[in-house]
Image 1 (cartoon, rainbow, N blue to C red):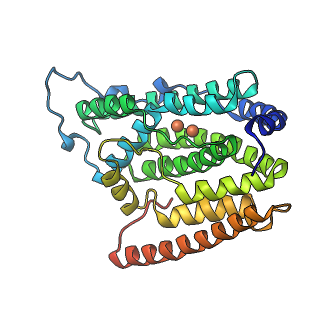
Image 2 (cartoon, rainbow, N blue to C red):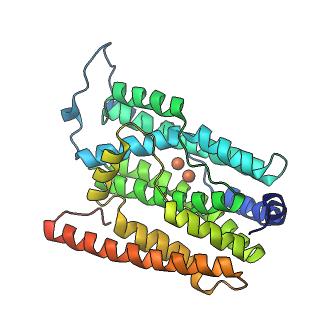
Length: 306
Ligand SMILES: [Fe+2]
Ligand SMILES: [Fe+2]
């Protein structure tokens, strides 16, 4: 049994204050309107059918743009989840609001870019946004530390996905927009990642148990989006976000190397068992990822490598 949420939160507050200041110092102000290529746009006539040939691109890249944007749109519900867990009278509230405002900027720049360039069907996109936001499906981890682990992994996964999507756009402007958004996601990731590091010191058994649950159940944001599983399959096939990336960058890069799961000290017997199961699980994902990568290499699929 880990610490109760209120006790953990109280101990996390000084860390959150330091990390919030670090975030505000590192974040650079930027303006969506300065990045969007307005000159490439023209009016939509009422009832005009969208023509994919106006901006040809691989279906998988369209899938990634669609899922990534709808996920940004869904941020009010992520806010709701973290705001409920983190309490209403500390630096966490300032963070929650700032985070939400920054994510909203991502939705603004991406939607403006996609509308001006006609990269996605604007009618289908708007209907999907309405459907997504009316359902309000988001992960709802049970505890504070589960929430922190989930958002840390999710922000890094989102950074990778935005960045790789931009690399597959045959357009410098689109590349720059996705890179700019990915840079923000990186700062979000660092905030949450380092709070988990603090939680591992404050309550190692509780944090390790949460890592096990969140690693085991991890899903990319976007569950609940119309057609999500087909889009996710296309995104994986194109190498934008797939098993090898998930294994190498998330599970090995963060859980094993950064959080040093294998050497966390002071675990109770239940947490020791959770750690062992998680290490075994990560190794298993690694084997699946290696087979996946080998099959793709045989098929000769080009990947979004810089
Ligand atoms: Fe975002
Ligand atoms: Fe983010």
